[in-house]
Length: 335
Image (cartoon, rainbow, N blue to C red):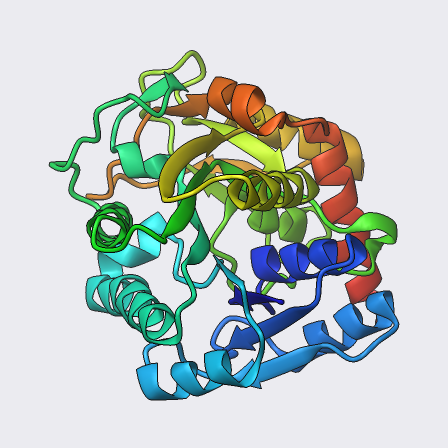
């Protein structure tokens, strides 16, 4: 049985249903801070069966230990956490508390209950460097001054320090690009809040007239002056998790890092794809200068994942946007 933390969030819910469709039994834990029980109902509708769910804050170590002791859990997929670079600048304490405290509590609970297999979803941003060819050997820039990125760097260091204390640990860290898309047939996807934190959700709101425009920063050292990012379909990410589980089952005492990226393009290029998919013109205005500095380019070729996990991104950026757009319309229509 596999525990999925943050299992009712966007990434966690798709990983959960993907594991179920592959025959795995799962337990979901979530504190519902960025999700709701409607997602659980959707998961059970797709799976056509009851799914074990426990509402718990991962920072509550005793409660988490009880969950781990109540089920025959053999592996943990850690998908919980805060992920907005811009918001972390405004709320640094919340990001350190959520991301760093959660991993410490989770690994303490795993140690106490004898569970030693974990897949952690990190970010390509963790390198703190601008490049479209990031590799697992790229040296991490610990001087980059963003609380979210620093919290991810701390989390990875905690994982690495813990790994060397016990020769039974088997861990993969997946450093992931920007995740977009939705599950097949538009019955599961990202629930867009009134005030989204990512560009795709903002642009989709603009496409249907919920907002008049979106603001873009045009101050990067790229061809069109907007940042360039690697986008990966959520179902391709699920595939990477599945391949990691299979790979870990054949290993002993290992900690391995894999970059998981997909299709790379600029934010202007992304907006053009969204316009093509939705058939609506998006009014993009220049963002006023602020103190939040973004890395110009974040991308990877995922060569190591291809070689070791037999994984590569299959879905195009057009399919990512089309799937998310279809799900968004379903939600707006009350489905």
